[in-house]
Length: 298
Length: 298
Image (cartoon, rainbow over all chains, first blue to last red; front, side, top):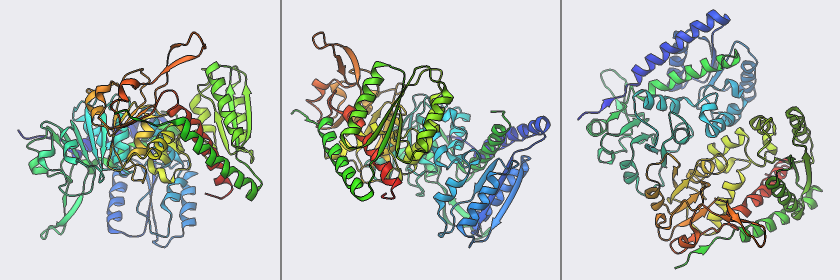
């Protein structure tokens, strides 16, 4: 049997429509809309296209959006001053600094400079800590893990008591999603195993997973025979494995061998069109929440 | 074969001696010693005896120690003001507020009021987040998990690639030790599974553990047949199961059936005398580190 495809593109549409409706209500009630400042340093093509998409999405849901492009050689002190400006701007509820930053800038210092109440990426240690202490009380959840959890829940996959295996232990995906799924919470309550490069028997662990979340960044790492029949498979990998000569666009491949895996899994996310589109949707949700907090709605 | 007993009492002695030596050096070099303020609200007998032990230990390693006892009915605002006083006291490097607090006081607000640089319990969200982002760069690790990791490492148990199973997901033990053992770090790098009340097959998970860390608070929960022969077993449970009629002292039992388990495990911690004594030792280490940071030594 072929697995049900969990389409991030479709779920994103629903979430963005929900956000847009909430923005309308906020406008009527408070005469205000959520404000997002996106700071891009330099002109890395990947970052430029990603920020462009974020800006476009923010505008599409009715946000007040400031795109603040800065030169590659901006001084660290000037970048910190810029963040401080937005920290003190009452019309800006979310501040996003596109990573990676040029090497002469200390990324950690920059992340720590953002007011945690405006840290819509949820990378500030105080927000990371809140997630670990209690997701339900955290103001923001990091965008990609939050998107993964939304996909699991909205696809009707039960999580309570489920065996979740997370492949990869990055700060952006692996560690936070593992912590989120293990919490005593309605959309979590799973038994969670984190596996990584030092794990001795990756295959054996994957085979036990009712929900397999793969964020390793290794194209085709997870073989079809590692998948438990009927499992929900979330593929976070977005690996460029070549270029389409006709369109000039990158060919993307996930960490899971999708074509074979979809014959075994119960539900599976595609690449592209899976987790990717969810990340920006959750960024919008965080910005909305930041504004709702600022207006005393949450 | 009988397991090697990992004695927390013995390891604590070594750690406290190391700390005492560092305090001596600090005194000579800087004319200063680490300062710890312990705030106890009310007269709960358990809390009183625990704080007394912390104070005694702090004095024994040469710290400047302020024991600040407050009445049960202290107003929240006054407690917050007291914390602020110590936040601004250059002779105090560590602030410990003994938990639990009376119900009219918001514990979260109190924890968040402590300057993270003086938060030697490492309960502030910023310190919890730092642990999750990168233990090696965290200023403080929470005392009980740090003690557990020390016991594992000092007993010569290899962690890299080891299967670690953590039973329990509390904020004080389960979640942080799981995160610490999964990190890409010399004393960690383990494959970690967090199991809890919603886990379907607790026994099967425990049986796979090379290192089994039990922090469930259920006396005798882990049966001997759940233990992999040769495994290292860390029992965090301290359950009062009765009282010795002759001495009037509480009879303590761990979460593991110790007598039977020690015939199967390779190494095991006793209760009492295991993890318990380590917690205060790690509190002293955190206070030392706080002072070392303040003096620019770290």
